[in-house]
Length: 272
Image 1 (cartoon, rainbow, N blue to C red):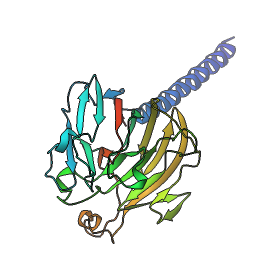
Image 2: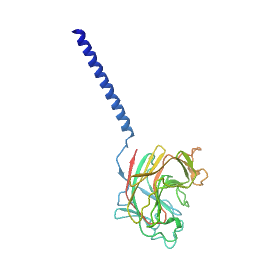
Image 3: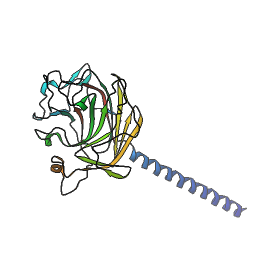
Image 4: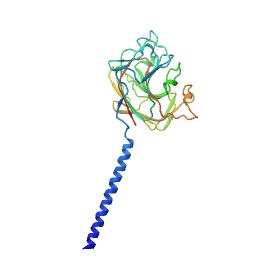
């Protein structure tokens, strides 16, 4: 009888030990998952009222000079306009920078093209703009620098007839790897071609995590690339290279002012 009870006790002890170990393993796995979760929820980084937290740089003008009221807030929308530029846009391209350097995050933006291309704009400027990531610090952009060094999610708008896919990755003073191989092309088209005509709102997202970038449009992944590096031959990029390290692993978010009016709203950030 005593032997039987001892056996039962041993079996019960083993069961408790197994359950305890299983719970610890589950808790450990849960903790690992928690580490991978974002540090915060989606955070709006545009307040819908003014340009607080943002700084502009337009080619040929000092940092923070908003020539021609290019960047403005109207009815809760961040608008980029050229109606005060006169008959020639020239090369007065610009960018609006979010005032925080970032490394791992997800950006979500709603945009739409509106109106007509600015007078004197380049041919490629029709319904063309961009959301730029890993952009150089705004205070390092030279007075006469057409575009900041960055990675650009190229935004295209359709003309009502032809395909003009958005989502290409354009490297301004930078290179990226596509399918594990370094590409020296200025722009690499999205693998999934999507064109949006008219003035409809479109949602784009960029996921940046540990050297891997992914482009999304309306929730669909259309492009991915990795391991961005500076182009040492670019006159502006080479000024950003420290101790021979070409790696680009952080930077600023910026929006292009290219030549076609564009609106942005619901600009949100999720940091990892």
